[in-house]
Every structure is written in structure tokens, then in C-alpha cells.
Length: 164
Image (cartoon, rainbow, N blue to C red; front, side, top):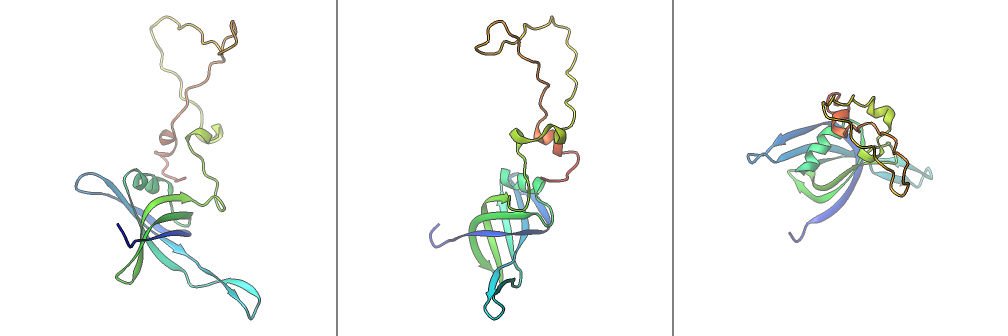
């Protein structure tokens, strides 16, 4: 649509992320980000925080599920999207939301440390004959070390609900 104002919001999540589903089953999440603008005080010669500005962020689809799983109260985020003023409040229809790495460490599936993933589940017993050993590409005759099955991020975080 034309005439929309695209904005980048940095701040802390305030409260909990509310996850709902539309009539068609599409996930939608809503949360508030408190943005604290910084101003330069010329009389004192230093920067200071001004009054916090609440921005209501709305996300849909997979981003809504991920936001509800990862974001908790006081997590620093960066969100981009279309900004609008509705009934005296700022609303951001977010296209992207991410954890602000200036304040937090975030892990994704490929970088999750083994310490956080916990012990790998034991492989299920099979009645079949042992499979042929795997060979390391380019190393004829050497067998590859057996790697334990990798747990997915969902299996690690779903039961605890601690967030990202």
C-alpha cells in the first residue's frame, strides 16, 4: 500500500506476548515494545533517557509462533514494519522481529551448544542387520565417527517454555 511509514523500533518487550489464531487458523501475536528515546541535555552536556513510548507490535504467520516462543518480558528487540497511529497509540505491523544482540545472546538450530541441548536421546533398537559403516568423503578406507542424533530446537525449548 502507498503512504505507509516504515519504521525500525528498538526497545524492550513489556508484558507477555499474546498468541491467538484467526478464523482460518493463521497464528497472530501481539506484544508491546517500550522504546526509550535518548536526548542530549545541552545544559549538563550528557545523554539522558526521555519518557518511554509504548509501541504495540502485531505479527502473523510463523513469525507470530516464533515471537510467542522466544520473546518474554524485558527482552530487547528490534522490529521493523509499517507504523501507524491508531486511537492515540503507535501500532507497528511488523514484518521482522529479532532479539537485539547488543543485549542478548541468541542461538539458532545450527549454533545451539551441546550443553544447552542436553544429552542426545538413545537410538531406538532395531531388528535389522547392522548397516554398512559410513565413509568420510575423500578418505577411502576410513570410517566416519558415529555422530549422535541431533535434537531439534523445538524438542529443547517446547517443554520448558523459557524462551530464547
